Image 1 (tube, protein in one colour):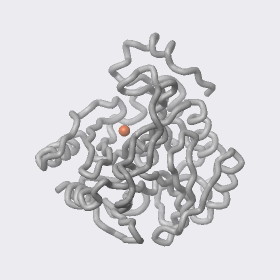
Image 2: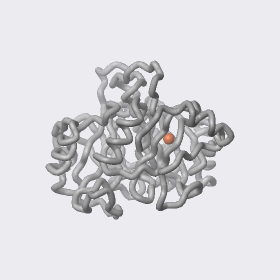
Image 3: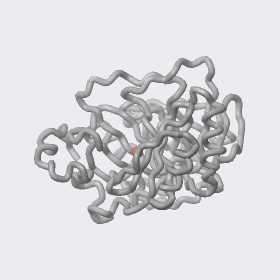
Length: 314
Ligand SMILES: [Fe+2]
């Protein structure tokens, strides 16, 4: 239905607690750049951090909603959730990352090779299940910074693994709805790709019929966003999926891009986001992420929000 309209992963968002540990981990251990220091779209006095490559390209953007002080239960793995996000690292860089994560106090676990690629699992400080996948065919060029050289740098997302409540419906949603193609099968894992495939354009669906339904909470990967090129294309996505009976939110102005959300038929939260106007709409490229930038709905409430936000050491 939407063949050619979905370009790849735009961003992935987790629900975690403790902004300081989050910031320190992503900027100092993962060596991502903070590209937007902002707050939750719904609750203005909670942090929301965006990390990515130097320019904040779609496909590199990891965002975490920080629920400091909010009594949320913990995430429980299960059907209807995003099981893990995966980053693409250069071939041969796994030992470097095991050492780097270990030196920072994070344990790593090797996972079985996945479609021929080496996989290493770790959890971020908020408990998000994360993986590093060695990838020899990632064409993305990432500007090295924060002391990492190009032979080790994370080049953005590789993929995400979804555990559907009803895998055949999730498969149908991605293939017939969004134009993904099935490109591989390994055990209970089905690999889908879009827009020519390759890292940043891959989704894996796990068939885990004996797992209970997953429960959202702290440590959950809340949603995955996919890139569509323009607001006009998003309207088309909205119209086609809405016409097929799916329930999408309205088209929301997220200041740096536009978004619409739905829960696909297997229970996974999906977002569609475009690229305009981009992260430099409210601060220059060289100082991205160094000052609080409020979403439009909180713009007039800066003083109160600044007084309520948990303190941070940047
Ligand atoms: Fe999002």
